[in-house]
Image (cartoon, rainbow, N blue to C red; front, top):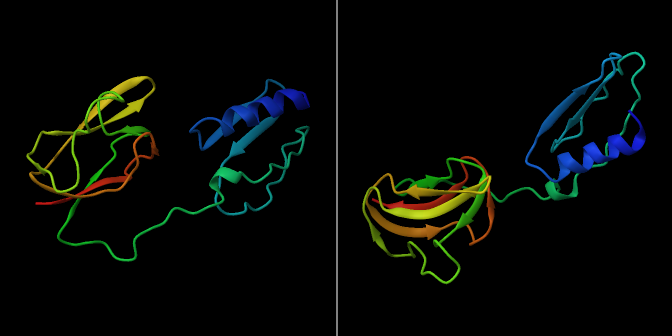
Length: 151
């Protein structure tokens, strides 16, 4: 595998949601591309495999803000998938919910687009929307809090 092919692989991993990929060649060489928040300990190279140094990923340099204490009386609606958060069914449509809206179990709260599929996220409890924790069009991760609901 030449340098340009390796560079293309790094670009593909950087532009995707992959956290790790392993490529093994027929000649026994192996390339592991991994995203990490912390520095990795050096790994002994496989015999005959080129030794690569990966540059740190700038997109992961800033840690996500985490609330100091969880709010006990509120229920968090979390993202069941990785994708893009949308508050409405189309750009000109009104949002499904707003702060202080009363909802019931089964109401659509938002849409998360994943792999060109629109997934409606429904309320698991009845209550009042207290907080909307993400912006329209924002990328969301699995299990990321989206809404806080007061039952």
